[in-house]
Image (tube, rainbow, N blue to C red):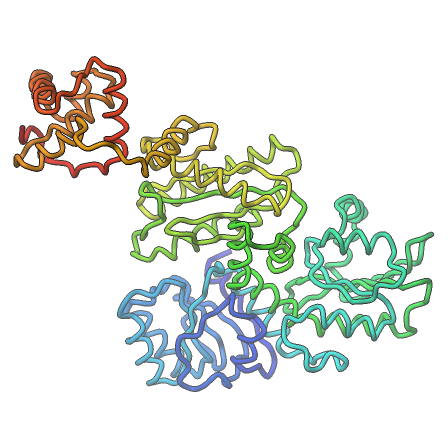
Length: 559
C-alpha cells in the first residue's frame, strides 16, 4: 500500500463537528499545545487529516496534521495559508519550534484566521488515534446522573454509575489497572477487594480471562457482557469504553451483598460506557503528561512523597519491581542536544521508553534525567537484564540522536515503588562515577564502578579538612602562579596518575620523557616533595584530586 493511501485512511469525520475548545478539553493538555487561534476556539472541527504532498487538497473544518513539515520553513507558512483559504480548523506541527518560526506562523494565521497548534510527546500515529477518539468522545452526551462532573473525574463517574446500576463499580484501563472505583464498601467480595487494594486485577485472574478469550470478546463488541453469580462471586457486568475505534478501557459492575442489580442495569451500563469515553480519554492524556505526575515522582525519589500518590496519578503498579536510571552526558547533565533544546532530551527519553513498552516516568533533575521504570519482571535476574537492556539501548540511540555521548547509571532493582529512592541513590552514584572516569563505558551499576565511587566518597569527606599551609602541592601551585608558563603541578599530577611511569606520563603531557624527568627534579627542588615517600605521594595525590583540573595548554609549553 502506498504512503499516500496509508495517510488517506487516517482521515476521520465526526458528523457536524465539535468545537476546537471542546476537543482540546477532552484530549487534555498531553496531546496538543495551541499556539495561536485568531478565529477563536469555538471553530468547528469536523475531521482529522494528514497533509499529503501527493494529494494536497485541504477540506473545510479539518484539523490538518503537517507531518514532515518543519515549523520554521517557508513550506509551513504556505501550509497555514492554504489551510486558512480552505476553511480548515487548524494546522498541527511537530514539537520542534525553531526561534523565529512563531512570528511568521502567527502572521500567516492572522491573515487567514486558522489556528496553529503543536503536538507534544505523542508520535504522529498516536496523535491521530487520540484525536479520532477525542472527536468521537467530544460529541457524546454526558450521563444525566453525572452532569457537572469535571472531565477526568473518574471517581465521581464511578459513583454516578453505581447509583444507576445498583452495584459496585470499577473503571479499568486496557491493562486491567484500576483507574477509579465507587465508594460502595458494604460486603465487598474477595475479587473486588484484591483488585482495589492492588490497584489492578490480580495477575492470575487476568491470565485466566486472556486464555479464555474474554478480552478479545470484550474489545470487539459494544454490548454488555454478563456473568452469573458463581458461589461467593456475585453477578457481574462489563462493557468496553471506546471512541472513534479506539479502545480506552472498561467499566465493571458487581452486585453487592446478594442484592440483584437494577432491572435496567445492562442498558444503564451501556449508556455509562459511552459517557465515560471523554473522561477516560482526558484522564489518559492528562495523567501521562501532567506536572502532577512529575511532581509526585520527584517527591518519591527525594524521600518526601508517597508511593500510593504516584501510583494513582501515573497508573503505575505500587507493589511490582521497579528501578531508577540516571541519564546524562559526559559532563553529568543532558545538556543541549543538536537543536540546542535540553527539553528535547527528556522527550526523547520518554518516547524511546514508550516504544520499548516500558512503564516509565521521566523526571528532570538538576541537569540530568531520572527515569523511574516500573512493572519489571518479578524474577530479580530478569529484571536486572531488562534494566541493562534499556540503559544500553538508551545510551546508544540518544548518543546518535543528539551527537553527544550519553551515559546511564543503573539503579538497583527494588521490590516496590516505596523503595524507589534507594534505587535513585545507586543510579546517581553510578552515573557520577561514569562521568568521572570517562572512557568508552556508557552503562554501569554501582558494583561495576565501586572503586571510583569509593574514591569520590573519600574525596568528598576530605573537602572540608583544613590542611596546614605550606604543603608540597601548595608550594608548587604558588611557584606556577608566580612563573608564567610553569606547569609543575600538572606534571606532578600526570606522574602520580600514571604510578610513576615516566614514559606514560610524558605521553599524556605530549612531552619527551627526559623533559618530564627534568621537571620532576624541579618539583623536588621547588617543593621539597619526597617522591620516594608513600605518605608524601598519598597526600600530594589527594590534594591534587581535590583541586580543580587546570585548563589544557599547548604541548611542550612552559617550565
